[in-house]
Amino acid sequence: MAMTITEKILANHSNKKEAKPGDNLWIDVDVLMTHDVCGPGTFGIFKKEFGPGAKVWDRDKVVIIPDHYIFTSDKHARRNIEILRDFVKEQDLPHYYDVDSPRYKGVCHVALPEEGFTRPGEVLFGTDSHTCTAGAFGEFATGIGNTDAAFVLGTGKLWVKVPATMKFVFEGTLPKYLMAKDLILTAIGAVGVDGATYRTMEFSGSTIDAMSMEDRMTLCNMVIEAGGKNGICVPDATTIDYVRARTQKEFECFYNDDDAQYYSVHRFNVRDIEPTVAKPHSPDNKARVSEVAGTKLDRAYIGSCTGGKISDFVAAAEILRGQHVAIDTFIVPATTDVERAINTITVDGKTIMQVFRDAGCRIGEPSCAACLGGPTDTFGRLNGVEVCISTTNRNFPGRMGSPKSQVYLASPYTVAASAVKGVITNPREFFE
Amino acid sequence: MLKHIISGKAFVLGNDIDTDQIIPAAHLVYKLDDPEERKNYGAFALSGVPAAQSGLPVGGIPFIGEGTWQSEYTIVIGGKNFGCGSSREHAPVALNIAGIEAVVAESYARIFYRNSVDGGFVAPFETSEHLYREIRTGDDLTLDTQACTLENTTQRKTYALRPLGDIEAILRAGGVFNYARETGMIETK
Image (cartoon, rainbow over all chains, first blue to last red; front, side, top):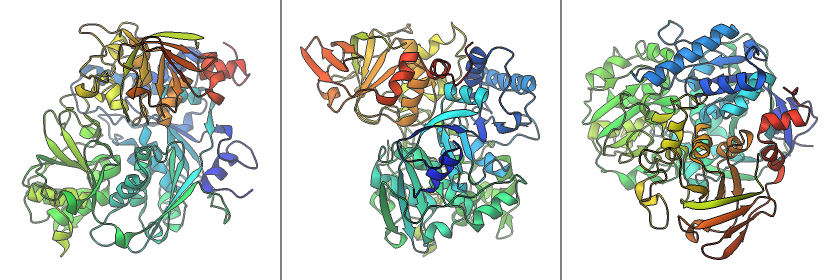
């Protein structure tokens, strides 16, 4: 039977010859990731179900990355870190990235690839909906809850219903003013916030072939915003080079069969796409930047798993160099590696970090920070009626803090251009 | 365990109720295995729903009374894409702690649906009817989980619900752990 890449990975991990949409399979897990918000609950269920002396199924396959509520004085949030530490010690887990240590990383979905845990052909589960980011590496990756994660911790297996695949084909050379974020906001706007529910969103075409891994991660990160179970890009030389530079572990690449069946195929020519935003309060509330240009803003925010990677800050710096921001602008590197990079990479003889400082931006510590609101002392949190333009992935009511705030989602180019003008601004103005 | 008959008052919400509305992120810090502390999840359940959309069709109805952690409502009625957003299991847990036994919606986001089933927290029923436009918050409902019907005793109307399908066995077992033990996937405790 002809299969898609997702179907092949799931068949391979359940020792079946084939897997077709709708099949329920028990599959073997290669990596389980958890963090400070869901780790404590997961460990509690694990102990309750497998006993107080139970051991995880494979120490080498468990990765724990605290990232959500790190730089806060909230005592409950601090206690969650202690619970992670206790579990790591008790289980003698090697892959833990502790707060207040040189190993601290920051946002899990960016840290996983940096540390070599995202590999083609594998199955990755994480207790976070944006675990789908790792599909960029040609693997099956999706978010699960605490109960499922506890089940995996004890057994190394989980039941999965095989998703049908929706193929999103992007053709053409990306114009200078467009970024991966514009493409995924366009795709989500086209199918709606539940347009891919239970299904795979696969990205292909010449535009994707030419993309860096970070840009492919931006696409796969937001498939959950259309309800998708997983996002995936077919691995190529770009993928293999990235992964090989970070891990010695063997992996197997899977590819689509020529006559694989798709639920639907959606074709885009990037020539037809303009800089795009999602208006409040839904990621599918799509508008061209030109339609909302001039909208008054109080704040700009650049960070998160989808918009706080090295290339996102390089892009923002292209616009912000020699400029001064007109509104409060918050910069939050996803990880410590990203922070190091923006302290090293230079533009016009200045580090990107210096460009941001000179532009009047406020710089935060690597973490999820205000992307999901969090405790009230969180850096960049919207505590009132602010209107914010952000490179993050969700703009639900109250997502970044106060339910009275409003969030526009956009690319780093659009956010940086808007920060300079204080109103929603088309980044094309800065490239013409 | 899934009850045969679930009855109680309806709390009605609209489309795209995301997990930040069900339990805002600032509250994801209470210990789930502490019997006292976990009551906070009930106290803040559905606290992120904008006031105008809380308790349709009128709106402005709090799901949880001031100073309490249990709701007077038993069944949540929603539109499409209920539970979209984050993977936080705290969402179905918060509804469960508040006393919700079932949700009836037109469709679900898959992680919320899966968490509801695998943890056995709430029974997620689907219907093709636009119930949130017909049922009023406070109506008395009776849900028959075997016949898959929802009776509105206040309005004297009965609606058909979709059969639960593959997940029914997991819900009836009381969650994925019980199900796995019953089917020999993992050892009995």
